[in-house]
Length: 197
Ligand SMILES: NC(=O)c1ccc[n+]([C@@H]2O[C@H](COP(=O)([O-])OP(=O)(O)OC[C@H]3O[C@@H](n4cnc5c(N)ncnc54)[C@H](OP(=O)(O)O)[C@@H]3O)[C@@H](O)[C@H]2O)c1
Image (cartoon, rainbow, N blue to C red; front, side, top):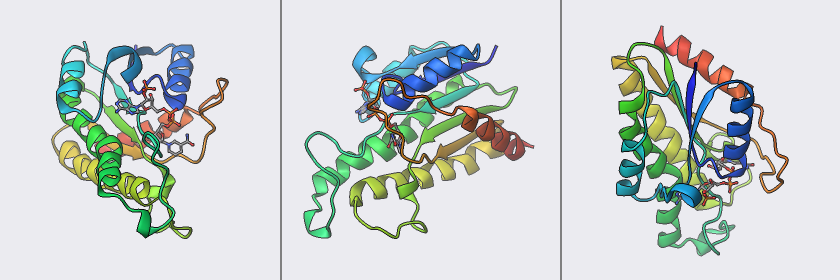
């Protein structure tokens, strides 16, 4: 049976993924900050949490992240840019998911196809940025895309794992009845299969 690991399982999209994947008969393992003290901005926490898991996982999805951290609202103007906020955004949205990949590769099977996906955001695309604003969130998601793309080149050369960063259109995750179209996973796996050929 296909085994899936969801990090950030307490979030709106994470919860919906867990629910839908369970309905589809997958074996789902969940990890989150609020229930497991898993802090994706701290490498020791990432290593400890991942080392405790029992794999292998055919699919790993990082569903953590935030547009605004604490009371810091997304910046509308360059004059609002605060280096501490930029660093926090990068730690949460870019470095964290890449460190998860670093430590989780040990749990990805070597004898069959597998997928690592981190939720990015459409606003991380430079080509599609016509509105401006949200400096540090946009930049952190652009950095995430580059980190995961670079890893996909390295990892896919030596094995059967295809790392991807998935972009999402807006979803109202503050409503408890959110459902996520997990068919995106099928597309992800199809991409992975093509890349692993
Ligand atoms: N919702 C959208 O419309 C949308 C659009 C584009 C992209 N995305 C991206 O999709 C991802 C999930 O979004 P969402 O709407 O589901 O967000 P959400 O409901 O706010 O959930 C955020 C998740 O991130 C976790 N998290 C935050 N800081 C963390 C930390 N330091 N260490 C570990 N976990 C941490 C939270 O954990 P706890 O709750 O356990 O603290 C929670 O599980 C994010 O990367 C977001 O940027 C969302």
